[in-house]
Image (cartoon, rainbow, N blue to C red):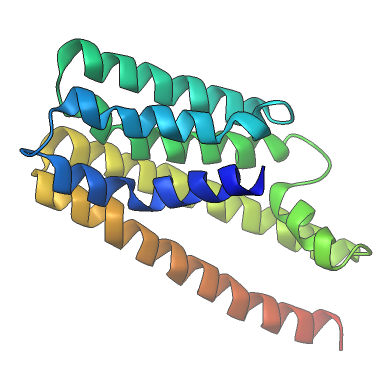
Length: 182
């Protein structure tokens, strides 16, 4: 089960580079197998997560469209799907008492004070904003950019931006803890 989860992460991270490398070397309908693998790697999470089911269904739909049309566009839309899935998962928790980031925080610190709960809700909103912007840029690169620009953004820049957001949030969290926990 953990092996499939790890495979899912590796496929998602390497996917843009594999598509870039495969373009012109491998027919798009064969590259669609990467989407099928990504969907299959989500099988263990499907029992527990509606988001995982939708994400897998979306990947299979993109794979089917690629096989039928043998075109690159459905393959290039996968990062848009990933961002939409993450937005849905994080966004949905904003309508529940416990936000996504609070769930993560409670794994390390089960007894969060009210100020920390409010902070985690705000961080969840920030991540939702990130997924909207990142997904929009991914869509723009899929529709209007060259294959190289699409691969650079979706395979390198977007991960760099995600890392910057993680690092910035970590620094803000340290300051928040210092101010609110003495």
